[in-house]
Image (cartoon, rainbow, N blue to C red; front, side, top):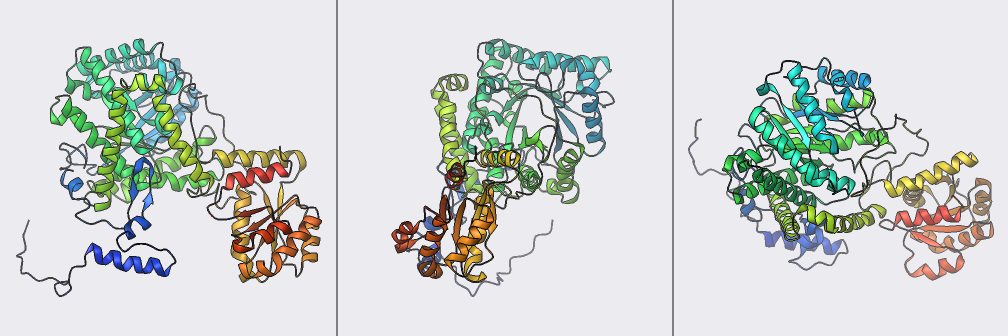
Length: 630
């Protein structure tokens, strides 16, 4: 490499360096002009975005703000592995494209498996047992699969030992050399207990998992026995730090069991693969995967392991929580961002859930889109060719550091409670995760966290997407949540009303004045009510209160929403509200903040004011109740 001489020439040499304080003064001035009073030294705080776990995204990051995190990141492939578990990163091959299969019909499952492997998938994630492929049909599902080329990862819940033995039997039957066996047998006793709430057989399952780990270490060097699955916590509503902390506590519990069974710490670490959720919050996902490697390396170091043993193997799965059932096509965008973030964050394997995952068993088109998402990122965008592309970003480095600290604090709290099993049994984990989800639910209800196609820009006329029902997933332990669940409940009420009456519940939008005056708020109101399955009926812009009442009666709606500018509200809102009430409106809404005119509007008949940032779920639930929608 040629090193150019430093001739002291700089294009910015004649410009003085700007300080952070100067930036704050300038921003504070802009904020005051925008009506936001902020002290000159608090511009950062005013423009910060609050995240979960006590974290916040600030508007400006500098080298000083992230110096500690960047300096401690190390090099790819070396402890603390923040920048990647391997020195070469993804090299030219990118990440392992891992497709999930849980169709119970063995022949159709085999057809889907072969189609995926022929078209870009590099490993298989099979759900085996009651929630997927029958154990006795595993050989049929893998018929025609070159097992020395396609690693198999099992997910069999409490049946992991039997499923693992069957897979090993297939390896032997087909003449596969032990060193050629790749993948993961999927033993996850604590994850199964978290999902089901069953602890009575945990000791037996843990002993079986330890025996499989010893077998793999002794005989199958490329095969791992154990999965530390953080998805049960993510699917229950956990924050990023809670997900990481629970995975750490689970991993430590397994290390204790494996070393007690006679394995070295290094060998025990080599039997673990960690599974995390990747969400459409790309920077948080990148930071989460980087932080996961860092904190696990710290665990390995504290256990006395050789530094190389602390390299965490990661399997990232696009988040089931973010998948919507309405307008499922938008899920393609969510999973694309999530898989990009997983790859950039350094995941070794990435599973893109099909866009129709929340509706049942995916069809061939959905599986094709899922596998092609990774293929395009790896083969066309060449994301995997860059090692830790986010590394060195002051924002990402500081977010990684703060997330690692928060995850470590939660992990320590679990350990003080007696470890992951004790924390699960005592309800500590469910209580904390439940509180986190409750707070997030408020943001979802107020659409501060919008769900495109559900709480924002819903399409009532879109026909539902039908899929074959998926096998029942394990339940009884931690709940499973979805971002769309509150709005899905409202839409289900509307669907039932449509089926029973032939029409959806309707809201009449009384648009006052010219289009320039009412369009913004009429669009806001239409979007809001459609999110609850309420069909907006637009007024063809009536000229007075009497004509508004006449149009309302003709619309067939039972509630109305007045939409216009503040200026026209002052002139027309009160008489229009009175006319709507006289015409039989069960409830009259007004789009916008009433200001000093509130009492006047209320006396005239306005029942509720709908505004951006208001509780949309509460408004829509009340409206459906008033309209008699069961």
